[in-house]
Amino acid sequence: MFSGVLLLSVIAGARTVKAQVAPPIDSLKADSLRNHKKVYPPNPGLASQYDIGDLARDLLHPNKQPDTTKKPSGITVIPNIASNPSIGFQLGIKAVAGRVLGTDPSTLLSVAATSASITTKNIIYFYVTHNVFTNGNKWNLQGSLVAAKTVTPDFGIGIGRGNFSSPEAIALTNPDRKGYALNALYFRFSEKVYKEVAEHLFVGGGLSFELRRNIEDKRSEPTALTPYYVYSDQHGFNRNGYSANGMLFNVQYTTRDNQNRAYKGIYADAGIRLNETFLGSSKNAAQLTVDLRKYISLSHSHPEHVIAFWAWGSYLLSGDLPLLELPGSGKDPNFRSARGYTVGYFKGTKYFDGEVEYRFPITRNKFLSGVTFFSMQTAADNLGTNLFEVWQPGGGAGLRVLFNKATRTNLCLDYAWGKYGSRGFFLGLNEAF
Image (cartoon, rainbow, N blue to C red; front, side, top):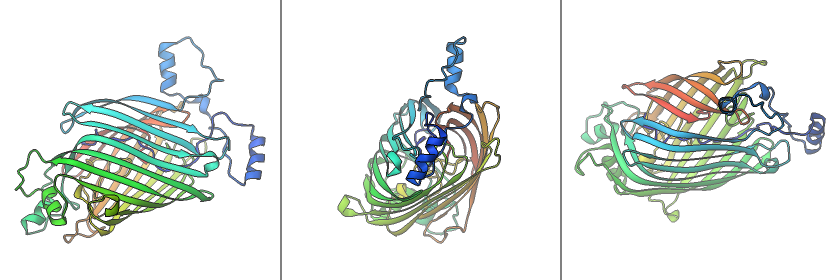
C-alpha cells in the first residue's frame, strides 16, 4: 500500500488510562464521592507484562533486576522504515508519548505523536499531533501540524463502477483502476478545543487549514483526460494548487478505558466542517463526518480478547471539495481505515467504511498478540452510483508487539488485501481504531 509516507500513528478520541502511581483505593473512592466522577484503579497485572523496554533491559543488562519502584515511561520511539515502488525506500523516526496531566484520578491520558521521514524518491513528510486532557477532563485539545513534499496517488472518484459512456465520466470513475501520481507541497494545520459538559460528553470547535501547492502530474500531458484534470476543470479548482480552510464544530462522547488500545467502551464523534472563502478556502463547502467505535471484551480474566467495531463516514452536504480532499479509503484522521487499499483508492462526495476486528493475546506475558480484521466500504460518485449501492471488501491479519505496557502502545504489523489486486503491508504504532 502507498501509505508508507502517509502512515500516521496518530491517536484520535479518548478514554481513561489508569495512572501507574495512584493513591490508595480507599482514598480514590473518597475522592470519587466528593467529585461525583468515576475513578479507575491502576492497570491490573502490569508487572507481569513484558514489553520492548523489558526486552532491551534483558539484552543489555541480563543480570540486572527490574526497578519495581520506578514509574514506567510513557514515551515510545521507533525507526520509521518502509519500502514500496510508489515511495522508494523510506527512512525516518517516529515517537508516541502518553501522560496523565493532573492530580484528579479521573483525568484521561494525554497523548502526542510526531514523525519525520525522507525517501529515495525525494518525498519528505513531517507531522506533530496531540490529544490533551486538562486536570479533571475540563478541557480537551486536539490538533495536528503537517508539512510535506508528497506524491499522492489518484484512482479517480467513486467505488469502481464504470458503466458510463462519456470520456469524461469514464476518466473520473477510472473503472480500469489506473493509478496516477500527483506531486505537490502539502501543509495542514488543525486545532479543536472541547469542553466537557457532562460526564463522558464533550462539545467543541476549531479551525482547519489544508493547502496544496505546485501540484503536478509528471506522467500525464495537460491535455490528457485524467481524474484530477477533469474534476478540477469541471468544479472550478486551479490545477496547480488550492486551499480547503474551514471551521469545525464537534460533539464527542467516550467511555473507552484506553485510547491507544481499548478493551471496552464506546467512542462517538460527529462534526460539521464549513469551508469558507473568507478563511482563504478556494470554495465554500459543508461536510458532515461521523466516527463510531465499540469495544467488547470477551473474557474477564483475559480482557485482551476483544472484538471491536468501527463505522466511519463523511458526507458532502453542499458546495465543492477538491478531488484530493474528498473522503475515501484511508482518509480518516489517522489514515488507518480500509486497510488493503492505498489512501484515496476509493473516494467520493459521500463515503462510508465499516470494519470489525478481533484482537487476541498470543503469549502469556502479553508481549505478542494478534488481530484479524474485515472491512466494507462504499462511495457515491455523483455520476449515477449512490452511497450504499456498491460495496468493496478488504481484510487481513496482523501481529502486535507490546512496545509500552504503561500506555498499552503496540507496534502493529498488518498484511491486508482488497480487490483489483490491491494489497499491502502496514506498519504503525497503536491500533487502527
